Image (cartoon, rainbow, N blue to C red; front, side):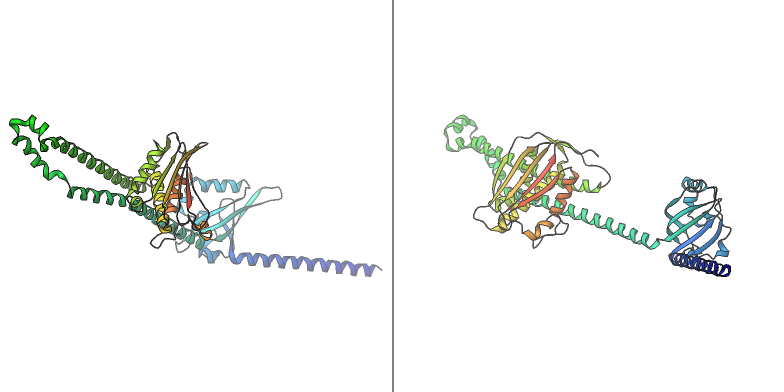
Length: 420
């Protein structure tokens, strides 16, 4: 009976030993698998390296014989070692606190190595730390890809800004070109060359000037001619002022983009009606050419604090888009309705056309960078408008009943500029 119990105990002991061996083998397999991707490094509390395992040599290039006895700082970049962060790391580890993060290290060949690493203090039975184990995963390639993506994103952003500048400058240049051609045409038909001849008329009739001016047919028309010259002068001055304002607008667009990301634009009190009228003037030539009937529905709204050039860019783009949509629809009556109204703490500017409308499949892409339905379009205008509206603290929305039913674009602007 006693022999049987002894055999049972022996079998139970063998079973427990076998299970312990299996658990140990399983643990070793997990550690080995973990070690293919991770490096294990043991340090004492002074940061002296005691042992390495796993992929340490593959990661750093050192054999265990080369690195044992070296301090942890030997693997780190110099700037990190001399920073307060390095001392804080080892102070926390000596206090038994866990630490993890991304670290830039230096390999045996002086190459840059990035690791995702954790430091785990090992505690004695009385909860006192006596050594530190570091687990390190190589993330160098991920860091390189991240840097490439950041560079590509930055370049794409610069290209997008540049394209927006060209698009907005192009819109204003159209108005500059119209104004310049108008001045040239008027100069060709100017009455200036007749001024010298007109100046001789009083001299020729100096002896009976009063009678000449009041009774003679030529004399009676002389004051009218002088008034005509005055009106011509006023007209030329007005056109030149518009031309100067357009050139100023181009300079503002370029100036703002030169300081893009560095300073915030200038916020000023602006009349919404004046901004809309200026945007209409920028598109005056094409609106007249297409015989578009402008319907103004302007409610009385207070001044708003905003960036003038950005609002002008948005409105000029929207009006030009409306004109192009109307032209393409080839309607009998071409209509562009512009509405201004106040809603809560915002001013709403709606631009509605009776143009070709927007198809259902295109509705989700209207503000997407590069999307366009125009044969010669580039897909930057509406995208740029939407971004500018957001930067102004507002929004740009649209409504349409589909193809052939026109569209409404609604620019919502805050009464006061958003705080930085």
